[in-house]
Length: 243
Image 1 (cartoon, helix red, strand yellow):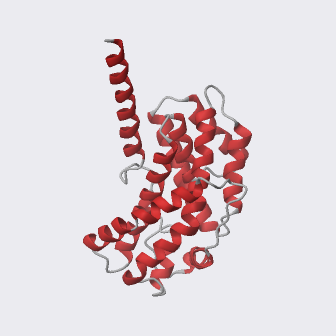
Image 2 (spheres, one colour; image 1 turned 120 degrees about the vertical axis):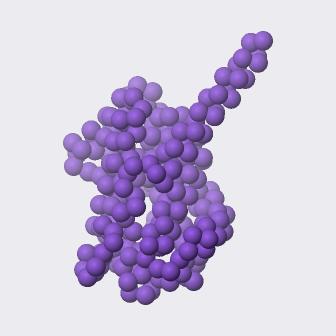
């Protein structure tokens, strides 16, 4: 009897964690993701990026930026898991500062920071956690950013969501959000966007797997085209997105 009860309790906790992860990774989660293209608008305006090139583009994106963000998501998750009562504030600030240094484009850096701040604020307002509130306050006091991937990882760690699942969910929703931006920037229908995202799932899994062998001290990222596009975004005559 006790064994069955324990099994039911475990299943219930697993289901709850899964539902929370689905909620956090939902495109409807109110953080303002639809307002950011992270340089894609510039590439579309210059006709560098077209629908036929999207599969190749996102494959390369995941190999570089995807692995980078997945690595930082994992480290923030570790901090969240370890924070039973007290958050390692110095490590949390370091994670965000190091990621800021690896984002040369101010526009992308600020965009990631805005999404991360909004994400963490929303989760902290929804789930009563002193750890999440402390993380948000620490970043504000240091004048630094709360990057989206770090905020996502930290929240999932605090909520005891399995790390690999959290990383996969983060990468999937990131690519889905960028594809949504492409649908508003170029002739890309819902069916084709869905097909592209479906076919990218192995690349998403590969990026997540590669990040498991890296640390925030060893990971590197080289995306000059996207960085330059983000830097040039404010100069566009008309814009749909903030960055």
